[in-house]
Amino acid sequence: MLSFIRSNARWLAGGFLLTLFSSFGQTFFIGLSGEELRARFDLTDGQFGLIYMVATLASAATLPWFGRILDILPGWKVARLVMPALAGACLLMAFSPSLAVMVLAIYLLRLLGQGMMTHTALTEIGRWFVAGRGRATSLVVPGHQAGEAVFPVSFALISALWGWQAGWIAGAALLIGVALPAILLLWRAERVPGHAEAGVPEGRTARDWRVGDVLRDPMFYLLLTGVLAPPFIGTTIFFHQDYFIELRGYDRLAFAGAFPAMALTTVGFALLCGQLIDRVGALRLLPLFLLPLALATALAGLLTPVWGVYLFMVLMGVSYGFTSTLFGALWPEVYGLLNLGGIRALIVSAMVFATALGPGLTGALIDAGIGLDRQLVWMSGWCVVACGVMAVVAPRLQARNRRAASAA
Image (tube, rainbow, N blue to C red; front, side, top):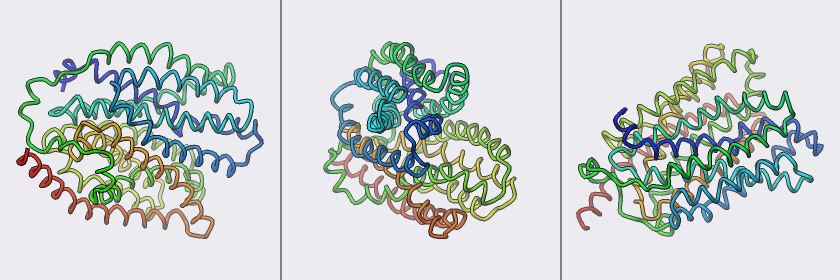
């Protein structure tokens, strides 16, 4: 691994920075200003949540079209377009003169931050690496966890000294003054695959599919039954965490104390999954990746003692670690490299849609008298069924790749 990092440091570091600075468009960072924004525009919690959902859905609808730019331009040129626009969105967030401008700011933050920054990183890593695709992805993805560890504390300190708007100004300054120059320097040189790529087993990269062909592929929709489970379930749980804490009577500090355990487990299992992908391929791991999430949601729904929270968080970390790395390496094995930007944009859009749908749908069920604990058991059942679907789909995709390779 150390030799791999030394040989590919510039491309890995650029990808890590993109996922790190995607934080400005992630829910956890935008939510840090939720109270101030609600007060500024006289919004209720429900109204702000609805605005956030609409803006997120709009970004999900835009991403399949905008994301195709990675099939036309190299990643560093896309970053040169996206990051100044993301910095502008941060400034819009700080100085929104009206509710409409705030909605536009949230839309841009979600599209450019959560969407395009991560999409650019994982698309380019997926193209540049074959034999080491799993390891490369596992080293880029923890940028998300680094952002979760660093930026909320930094934002809180800046806000305490100079006000919440200064936190967004600092974010824009970091994007333009630090992140963008570094990424342009690191990624200006395209990676040329080394000699190790020649020994990659068949099936690690599929034939090149077009976006329209993907939409007509039945396997794509079967894959979505599993792929959409982690973003739907994860966002739902953490969006409703206040309700869940009150439902169970947990101490808030005890609940918050479980987050570091989840973060450490996520990073550790992301690295482990990267090694496994390079050894056996992403498709062979596909039937197994939802098992930790199935167990985590079942335990969260059934276990009431506070120690169950820590067990749940560790299992969520296992799930997040495997999922984030697997999703970065899976799509070249299924649909090839030529149109990977457009294909990944389509998939990321579906995942963003799931993150918007989850809190709203489960919140409506809570209002209808169906508690989150019961819903979590249902979600566990979804994961188990999806594992069965993946067990059928994965060997068929491997066989399809072998047939395509033999016909080439």
